[in-house]
Length: 289
Image (tube, rainbow, N blue to C red; front, side):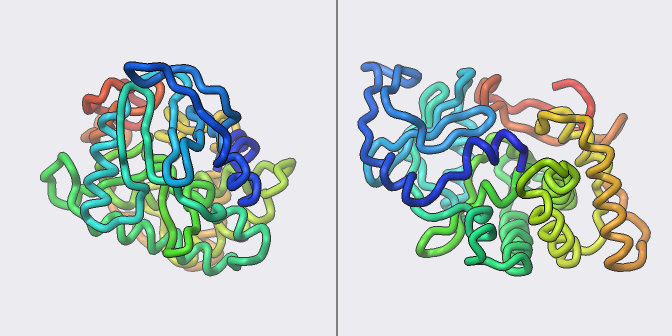
């Protein structure tokens, strides 16, 4: 839940529905062509445009190859995990099912979803994802990780929640994914100037009460610094907040060993997003691609 994604993506459901009727003109013969409509939503790396009432175009502003992201989403869809259906993937462009509904942030701000229920939903989405087989790795205990699972990336459709934005997806220990959500929530909570700081703090406390000890906090912070945040300076305070809240909720427990950090085994990250190639890359927190 970075500050830019909140500023660029939180729009009312009425605004989304109105923008859905705007025409989009695409260049013949391939993706990446010009568009004439305003984005339906925008994040740090991509814009989403309404194609019609049933489909949207997600376009990465810096180019790249979305095929690996599309393959992952098809894999998840085949295993009944709630992701938008993929219609087409070409260069920086993904054509997806349009999902109508507020984000979990919007629903929480409006009071439609209370904080405890929002926290339980995030935990449930993690649990369902980590119960599925990895797409590439056959290693025991290795699972698909979203690594950006926060309330702006959960849409509340009429038939249930849908998880969007799989650009950071990886394979590795589930503890890392759960820790990353805590770090993202804490980043917003420690930014006192942010309008959602108090809500993020409440949600962080409820989330940590649900998941228990965060055993992969350090590798999550390292990975977040490398790939996710626009303000690295917030991360030390965010990590300290996660530790402080966890200590208040329950007594410390011995941390499980998580293979991450310097000298540890890397996990697979698909080359999607602005610099993507469609091929798998290898990453260790704080290390080189």
